[in-house]
Length: 252
Image (tube, rainbow, N blue to C red; front, top):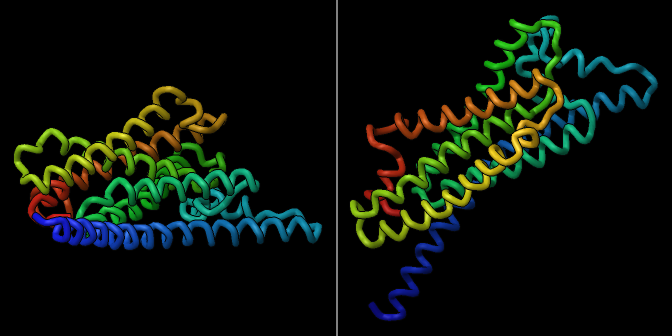
């Protein structure tokens, strides 16, 4: 292959990668803005009530508890203070970018389906856990987007572990597919190591709360996100084989 042909081929692959990243990051940004906008609106409304000298009950009204069952949904966008809000939003943005990066070398359609499945899971898992928790402890008030963040982190780990395992099957691929698989696997191994080190080396930082109830919710949300990612890779939305395996037939 001549130099000019190799350059065209490289430019073509780079262009397709840029298209996938733009598509994935656009979806991730939409998810982030949805959570961020609702959270900021609720926080500003609570702050304004305090500034005008009235004791705001908005957070209590929207929190999840036995007295406010609608809080199983609304509590996901309620935060106690600016530190609580900023920490959750930074973590949410970080793991959304991680999710895109983890699946960036897959075909664009498959990457979009994985982001969509994760976006559904990160809302469904915390809501289900809130229902379960307030039925057991109706007197406890729960608020914050941390359930979304931990479910998303679990989803990132699940997909990165699955993608990394493709490294053990290079002999079934062509030379071009082996290079793509190697790049995908190595990048996902790095993601796996980062997430697992955070979990193993510093579990108290990973769980991130001094309240036992919240710690359990964090852990269960993480496990829920991890499980949904595993289920997707076992039973993808289309076809019988794993979505990453189908990459070898479709190309990047």
